Amino acid sequence: MGICTNKQYAQASEPPQNHRQNRLYLNYQQLANINHPLNVNHKYNNYFQIIPDTTAGKGIKMTNQYTSRLSREEWLEKRKEFWESRVEGEKVYWQSIQKAIEEHDEVNAQAILNACDLKLVNNSIQLLYDNSMHKYDVPVFMINEPQSFPSTKLCDAGLIQDFQETELKIKVRSNKLPQDFEVLTHTNQKHSLN
Image (cartoon, rainbow, N blue to C red):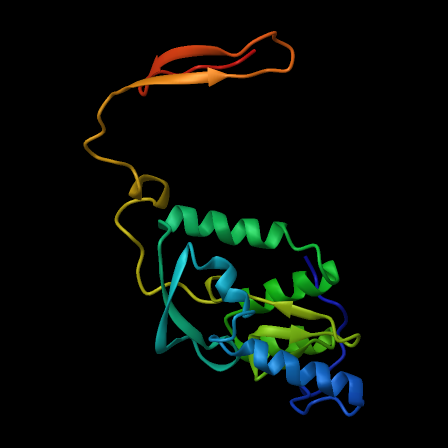
């Protein structure tokens, strides 16, 4: 994984001068607000709980603090899944964003983004855009660790502890059969239709 180029210059913190681009930039600023309904973090509400008025990280990596509903292992898997599933925008930009997030030195992280002409919205790596004004949203769980992890895995959390076995009647209907038929089973049995 590499970065775009090795050119050096200061990060542009001013909005673009082009009217269309400036309008997009102002829209991006609104999207950066954690309370905006289209903020990227809302896509992951099932996995993470944002803690209002509390921050984690510093500089361009400052985000809202959050707690995880995923175990550490599930959280790491979700992060891996995020990087592997980026299809919008340019792949090299996503690679550079990942490298900048993983970089511990903020000056180096900023240099990685500068080399690709990626610009920060509100001086945060959570929302960036490229020269064609394509935006790159990065949820908080990709940037900082949560305040806490649960003691049980998310997939185990909803299981009923005092599960009772019961009898089930299942009606099977197929367009390949002349009539419906019923199957009698129990909640503790597995079945497969071949």
